[in-house]
Image 1 (tube, one colour):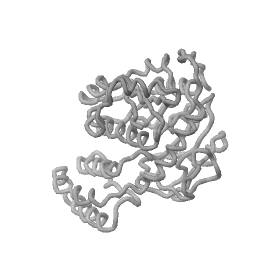
Image 2 (cartoon, one colour):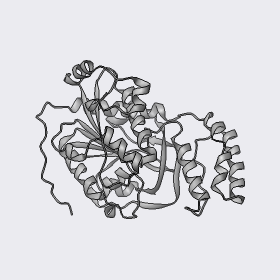
Image 3 (cartoon, helix red, strand yellow):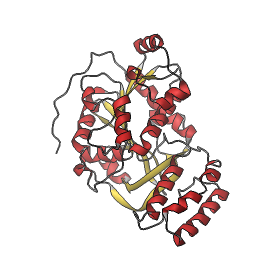
Image 4 (cartoon, helix red, strand yellow):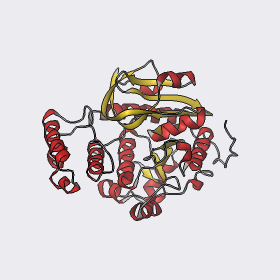
Length: 348
């Protein structure tokens, strides 16, 4: 069943690959009682903004089956944006004020690149917490990805994320912990990409009432849940939605930052991502770049040779978890009147 982009504001990349459905067809699907309405709050930086929306479109399209899914795009205000990013938001996104009087069954909120060590000092903090308050009382379930997950537990429980000695970067294997509707039918071991410099510890999460779903000794907690208000909050420290080449793009970005002198150390190669031959090619480039620290050397970076070897080893796990999540949302849907803006209650 094709997904429906709300209001006919369909980003060009999705329209090019999937076409633009007829307005009448969209209206019929949208009117179905089983249609699941999802607010996607995409806060990724400009360079990843369109990639991220495409990744979530693809994933939800794959797992929806015969159930129509309507997606409406939002982004938090006060995020740093360039001219292209601002134009994309004007063309295809809605302001978060539109949420308060809208009806949704679920919400997905992405992270963004932090500028402050204390997330409460970020310019967008008040807007982010307003969305979290709204989601607790107006959705069946909410997904918080990476930094959004860290912000969520900080706001709800005062849990402060801990900096890692090195970036948790690559594809890691996680063990399913216990039984939960969101991990039904998944393998006992699942793989997911991670790209983060901070961590949340299992003991801290469980002591505050969170249930850990997947974890590993090597990479720590992957996903965890807690019922907040009437909404089941599903938190991912990783990125099940990532495309096959997303980690490569991030690796290239970090190499450029090293060559420009914006970071002191050459970035670690993403774990469990490159096959042996590609890793050897990239190690050779690293040796050259360390002795010739100039951004111009990116012209000879072997991107094409490496990209052709990549595989999305986590795709089946992502599909299974998101299919379970969409099923959970479908089972919890209720026919209620459009929600009204709620009065926010301060939290200690």
